[in-house]
Image (cartoon, rainbow, N blue to C red; front, side, top):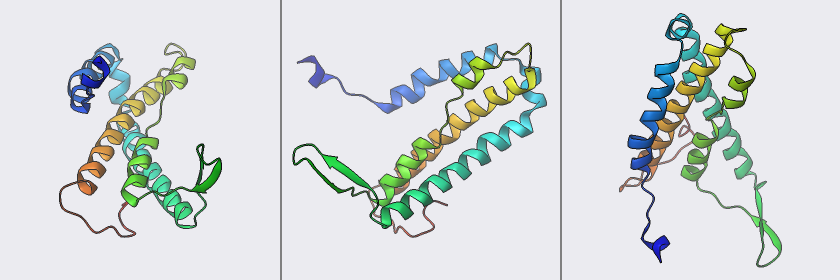
Length: 156
């Protein structure tokens, strides 16, 4: 079958599909408003994403350590404890900290609120970039060839 021969390579997505989308968005944006709000965009985009990541990771590790996470097994028709490793929790948290601003941008018109529009648009781009970097960092740090020690400071 053809499905057995198709392999998804994330490098193709990150290096060939993502840049044209980001470059097209950057080319069509209102650069003057973007750079007027550059400091706020970076604060929301970088620090907001990192704070969200740390909160998600810490809360998920805490909830998981209390055995409050369960899953339903359809074959046995019973609820059982969900077993996740700390690197898996950190990977999941890095994916969840990325926000989608498409709905917010679609409701804000540039002509009526140009500052809010540029803040939302810029924060969305920076947030996505930081989330991708976090995901790749966690992936390379924990899933490398050698085993690394995982402590309570791992999310930081």
